[in-house]
Amino acid sequence: MLRDSARRYLADDFAARQRGDQAAAWRGYADLGWLALLAPDDAGGLGGDIEDVLILAEEMGRALSLQSYVASAILATGLVDLVASGQQRLDLLAAITSGDQRFAPALYEPGRRYLLEPETRAAASGSGYRISGAKSLIAGGPGADALLVSARLDDGSIGLFLVALDEAAASASHYATIDDGGASDVWFEQLDLGADALLGVTTVAAIDDVLDEARLALCADALGALERAVSITADYLKTRTQFGQPLANFQALQHSIVDIHIDADSIRSSLYNAIATFHRGARNDRRRAVSSCWVKTFDAAKGIAGMAVHLHGGIGMTTEYPVGHYLRRVMVSERSFGDVEYHLARYMELAG
Image (cartoon, rainbow, N blue to C red):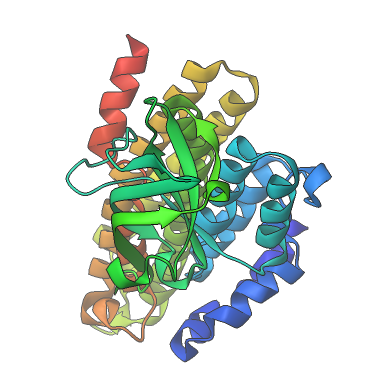
């Protein structure tokens, strides 16, 4: 039921992206309750399961949605719920679920690839903090109201700060990514923050646990994108003719379509395995399953989407035709929360 309603609602997303009407789309997500799925009951959320979110993520990938749902809904909700407390926690979660505010997690730093140990520093200053450092590749940054910034405190622990984007606007750089989305880089040069900017203290391990939910969501997003690309390609080969017959009649092209169908099915199997382990496994088991799913998904993704573009010929690379957008989408997703190389190393380390 959720899948069907999401697919119907998102059916016009590719046309909407051409119109640039993204704020209205985000409000629509809030009205449908999609932003509240993972928020706990006591904060006005729906207290849903990871499966619900993955269904939505898959449909968003299929529809080429430009909304930063994984970063600004899944990851932001998880981080706020992890570190904030009291009325502040309730207020921030309510702001996310209602769509009134969008928060962009700022966890990665220039030159440090996917390390979560921050070099950004937040020193006590008067009644608040003074933050210095840099954050890069902030997904959803251009449309965010505030950033969720990880920084090292004086005692060596890791704090998560809420930094209004207008406070850092002078040192922020917003740019488009190749999938038509957007990201930001921000530099903090002794930026003074109030005491209430510190949401709470956490650990790298706890942040990584929240990231694993977002990683599974990106795998589901990629799966939706790839299956739709395969479907479009199969339909194209049935209608495009050469030498007096449809391209789908040629055996070599039939084999290519079968190969990418099989690869896409294997990604779905890997995702299902990760979901099952996520529910019943210990922390290391969950992490191995997520990294295994990530490697399987994105190791195959560029081949599947690349073949879809290849089988279309020149039209596959045009802006007006969707299939090339699927390739660019999975290329950006693969580098969002650790690339294939990173997750291979993570899996091997966890496997002992």
